[in-house]
Image (tube, rainbow over all chains, first blue to last red; front, side, top):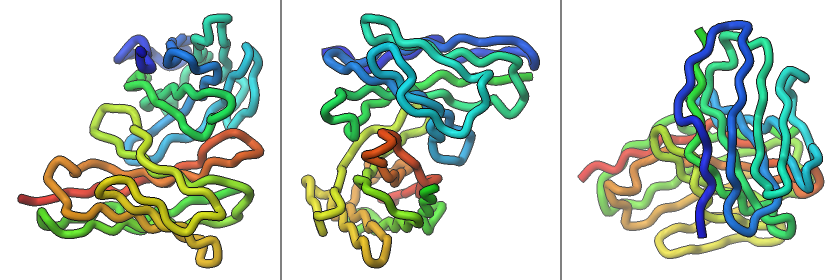
Length: 113
Length: 112
């Protein structure tokens, strides 16, 4: 059984650019959630995907968007990057019936300059 | 909306002692309370979950209590070890919304 993987590990972008982060869910999991974690803070829920549809969204602007693919992997896209978007982006996978047991990936550290 | 407060930013204890971390919440809605461990530069690792109708849950050296009257959860690590040093996150999983709301964490340091 493979765990949750994310790529890339680190990324540096310039303000105004666009970025795509990727996540492969744990084997057998069909639900993916994305979180943003600023330094010294807890993760903040961005959105969740189930069956390739967005299934709940946190307080993030529309420039944060996502996709889920038939193999349950997922992408997070952020347009028009701002300095405050610098954070650790975490992906968590779960099974629909036990979606309260989330398994997190190692995260992607995004730095916006 | 739900708000989670973890009372201490940092907790330092001696090896062998019991560490007790506190989590308070507001605006309760049907939820499970979760505890995670996070090491620097890593994603959170799920430790324990306690449901609203449960008072206490144990797993090896870990114990979690959930008091819906006080709106508080306590997380205990008994016989603490330096390897227990990490940031511990409390979260409320909203069963209707399918999302977790996290506190900012308490960083525990266990000194040998």
